[in-house]
Length: 472
Image 1 (cartoon, rainbow, N blue to C red):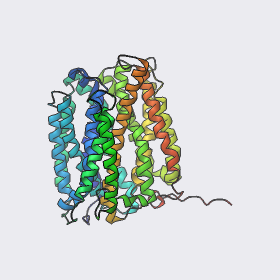
Image 2: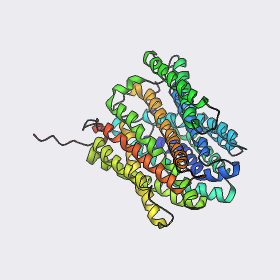
Image 3: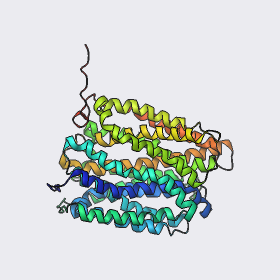
Image 4: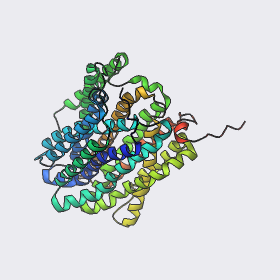
């Protein structure tokens, strides 16, 4: 296992890694804002253009399990720099796409680069951080990276209106080059190790199961491909997923380390926190499309309003540490989870008669609560993981972390299509988006009772929270 450089400053490393993650987060935000413009240019339904997002997220998910072995074998810094190059090149190609098929292919390549970027970058940071510094390190990592979601919606709208949707991909080129140079200059070189032979069969089974499952979910009932291929893909993905599970249980170095689920503070955020992420992952897809199709706004106007969500999230970051110290992980996740779910449900009620300021405030408050939930989950999950398991834990958790928003987009597009078909409308209407937000809120709310299984002192060493003794 790689050892951190003794002189490495976790704040410096966090900020540099975050500069590269800024590009990845910026990409997701600008693409969602540009989707209606892409749909008009390509002659596609906006809901079908969700494939431009899900194909990228699925590629992220499929390739992430490879990241821990590759980082150990070739060195985390080297792999991180290569990931930036692949991501930037694929971004430039996406800006040249001539149709939906081209765009999906280039987005898959972009996802392959992103798959190495986020988990390996986080691994560079985690291996040099003591447990009492973990919360601070995660804050330094996420706050700069949040500039992507903050700037993404307005930037995506302005670029789309002024230069066309292709410009939202080209913006990654200068950002990626700056990130590459900072990594090469400031992050210490970490020598590769010999991690042993990878679980090739497990990696293949996991990747194939995820790809087939997401293909089936994305295409079932939409006449995108001929029947019964979507159903066949879903069934095959499920069967291969079962085989992958048993392979990962018996392999000496599994593609996904199932044994990590024995750690309560890993199991609850990883599994049940992912359910929250699925519902929350529908929101960044639904909001800009609703504002443009349901409210008749331009891409720039919707972007300037949509960024309120990320602004709320950015505002929450300095408050996370004192809130967790005061309430602890368990109470924060339970109380805040209900508030975050309510914030998503309230998005079902705005209409074009609402003042823009009221919509902006509603989005900002929702972003505030979801940010606390995400940061709490992302920190608690590593609280009790031993150093020798960090690589496997990062790979496992990052896979779930990227799969969840992909499922969120599928949830949103499926709900929109179902609502439209049930109502017999030829095109999407505002009522369909209202249904989408209510369904997403219901899914996030389902995670809350499951997180209640956490102990009262879960992650106390990280949060600094001291639970009050129970009264007799």
